[in-house]
Length: 621
Image (cartoon, rainbow, N blue to C red):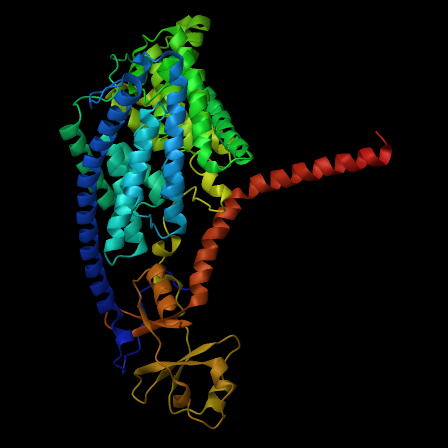
């Protein structure tokens, strides 16, 4: 830093030139006004997308119910039907396999992008393809998912509608002349509006956008997503039933020992999330090694789903009613075990086969079952702690999603919104944080990012304020730039320059600013020439501007230095690109210094291990 913020500004050099670069403040104001109108347009498009996606969410649920009734009851009806109530006997084994064949054919002849559970595919398009998704995904994804789930696939409707909403938002963005960032916002708005329409959880959907799709927190991205999620929630109230999606009995206040117990359940569920993520991709690797075309993999996965479904019918289909039963604490033990383990096996094989379906509902079901089992064990071993089984199921449900996806805030808020039990806040915080900690320490990628990481796509794992936005130009500008008149000879100017000077301010005979001269350029000119021949007018930056806007000016103009203007229009300093890089480097150095003790400990430990091994080799011990 070359200027103390507490010092009064020095007298500036009056400007004698009249160029666009000296009107940077006016241009910045015009850009800001344009940004406001563009934000308003993005908000309107996001609301439009949310209205359409709300209707598609209802349509998707109806089609799933229709295919379920046809496949398991032989009836043409849109009424909700549970596949567990079928009367097919052993024939139930082939129903999911038939659905897998149809999904494989749609993926092969339609679009391979319909495979998977939706969120990783949307993340990949955001990170690598400027948020462009094929418009055909808007109808292929929900149709393929409805076939997969309607024929018994152990998935939820939320993943497909998130993928469908993202595809529609992206398509809407491609119809208009908008920036890739605005298209990303529309993709996220459409995706989260779908989640909000299915579950009536707008706040959780907003956090999902921030944690898994946007990777930023700014008004230009947040406002359209918020409006889309509110619209989706209104669509849920209009098109679906009122009240909590997962009703559960009232929960009592939590004592400190019980809070510790719920946090411990979250820790154990986090270990389960670690194993589940690894198993899912191990199964996917196994399918990759099969000597048959990938088009037939969903049929094989469907056959496994059918076999499991024959012995445990409640593992078939979406099974939102299973989650409600688990959260009520009245599910029979045999069914709890089947949902914890057989549902897990069925879902992992189906997902690994590359069929079309979601991950949220299965993770919620399996997590609730794990939490309930752990709660039962804790009640038997430590009855005085006071654990409540519905609360144990709830924290297990949220903790598994938090550990597997590393969407911490989404997991907590989703549980609160879908159950409308605010008294569960502290247990959810403790359990989800513990699960997240296990995932962060022991797992490099999540169930959402492992697939795209294998394709060479790196998903951001953190977001924070831009350091360049927190530093003003006047804090790092050079105020001690030598000033010379344009009539002076180059030779005399160079002879009197102190070492290290790279630029000069050039003024006219009346002391008004004309431009700058590069010392390197002067050394290549004739000593007898006047300084005026080497003068150039640089772009300008305001003294109160932040370094991010200055970096944008450097990028647009290709300049190596900017004249810094005070509010009254006088030149008060010079900013070079080196100062911008230095400010950014200072921030990085501060982070490295904060981590230095840990790094040093690791290095010392490594040196001790190497020294011990060397000693053992020398002594033969």
